[in-house]
Image 1 (cartoon, one colour):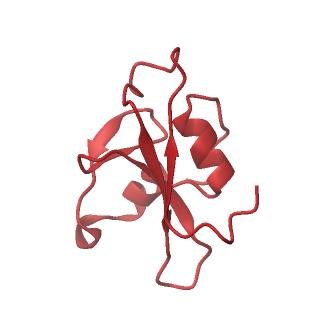
Image 2 (tube, helix red, strand yellow):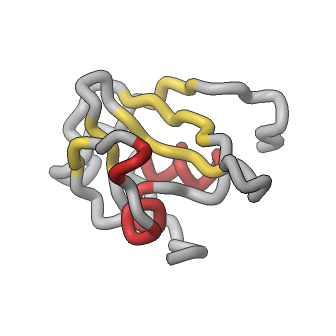
Length: 97
């Protein structure tokens, strides 16, 4: 799917048989604009300041000043399609990190 028109949020409902770490009723897939001019990335978030990582665990998302490269590698997705598929519990190959 072309993501250039998507500004911020998608709501994704996980599959009923999704892995145990994706037990939210719905999640947001948010565009994360990169300040250094790099391509935008995507985060899977819930309404309680939690973010889903490639390890399929939810963790509290720290303020931007408290994030490092390891955080971004674990909690950001390169494409909207990958983030939406992962949020639904589908297997997605990690292309970065």
